[in-house]
Image 1 (cartoon, rainbow, N blue to C red):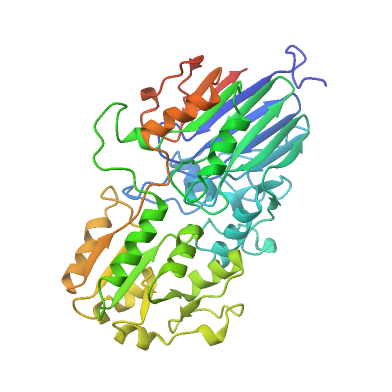
Image 2 (tube, rainbow, N blue to C red):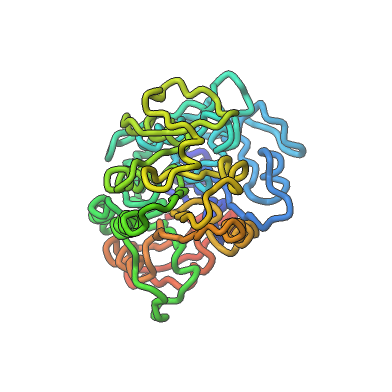
Length: 439
């Protein structure tokens, strides 16, 4: 294969654009000769920023991402930048999972560039985007709510010129989450995406690590190590997804004759599946959440509509619960108080009620909305409790990942303190934006 640069032989290169010393926003390129792949296509989330980006031009001008002229939609006008022909004969974009910091820019990828994700991630993204308010909406309106995505079955292999990519399921709190095994003619690269061991799919994480043992490079997320140094005491024991569901079930059982509401992050399909099955009360979701859930799983679920809800025609009308019935209920339902319902009806909740916050935004005190959010319930004499668990491996488990893969090169990304890692099996390189490494 002829190199794009006749003065250099073909070799594998990794370029790190974003996701460096931040939690989220990974934007990484792997290339070999005339072939390259890019993953992911989200952007860093900073709820405290005085100005939130509204479109691609904002993302670039505010420094969230660089302009990628042969990747971004050629029809989008970005001042100071222009689209150019792809210098690679073979290009593709991969999305590891359906969280905004990995998928937010999905609809800004040029229509000529194929996008791949696991089949379940594809289902989640297409359902979540139905109202054009999850990922950035498409600039072009001829592709519906979500630009075309090719779904890949578990452990399916995609060929992009001389690069092969195996899309491998891993445990994370986003349905369909995947890590990538990238194989070029001279290197093997493992990309964890976001990964953990304490959900319902621990076996998938372990299978991913076993398959990538001895990889030349490990590109690894470092969320948990952002908040605690290795060896520091643990504030609280690790909570598993099963324990979250068990605690919610117990809370409902222990509070009869009390209105109980909750909210959750919609892409955590496994959690809500378990809550629906185990809850002593009938679980009722908002119409939008029910649409996402049934679109992804095919399972029916009870739901309610607000007056201004769109018509989700795929929902079973016999499972609709009148919203007024939920507002007066004290013992029959565990129902979702999503952001729209809370904004319109927080003052209508019954006094001495209970609200369960399980993975929904706001996620923590770093978000300026966090304290006012909980104060709003206190003002209504509603007890608000948080029951959730991390979507990321603990610090100790993160080192298990390194020990399992034993990479020649370790590249920590997706974390604020990558320097806290070490690689006992080779070198560790701390990426900076724009860094290119030849393997």
